[in-house]
Length: 205
Image (tube, rainbow, N blue to C red):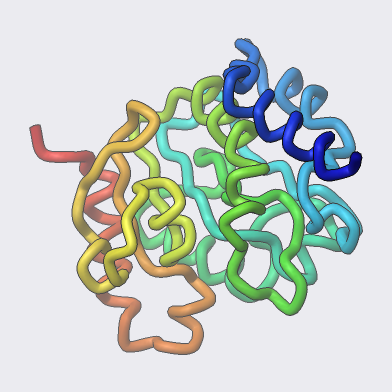
């Protein structure tokens, strides 16, 4: 009997299209829609949902992979050592954190700071897409391999993706290295700096 119920559920999933993402006019509406999300197992180990931070009219949006320990405690993205480096990187190209919007491909901390898994990214994607639609940024900068792969649908190595303009969700996307990677690999900072300069300049027509 249990098997027949599972078969029926799979059949319904196959013939019934997924519910479309509602249309929102503010990030507050997106956050309310998200609620105390339990769409994936990451919800069981979190302290706080890390929704994102920044102005709704931000021209540039940064998307990382997932919250770390400090972000999980505070409910804000990029507040640990990687966040401090990101602030310094922004300042180096004439930007302040208050001018950009920062989010992640998953809103809850993966255990042990591992990369988010495919099903976790899929569970969070409607929220990220809704954020992008509300903000309507001129450009998105993905931080790190998992974010670039999730947004671009690519499995290419970061060395090939970084610094190259692509497009996702109707927005120009420029991948670069994650600040946490730069803390471990400082020799890559010059490449990331070049990427951020290109980000501020915008894609070449």
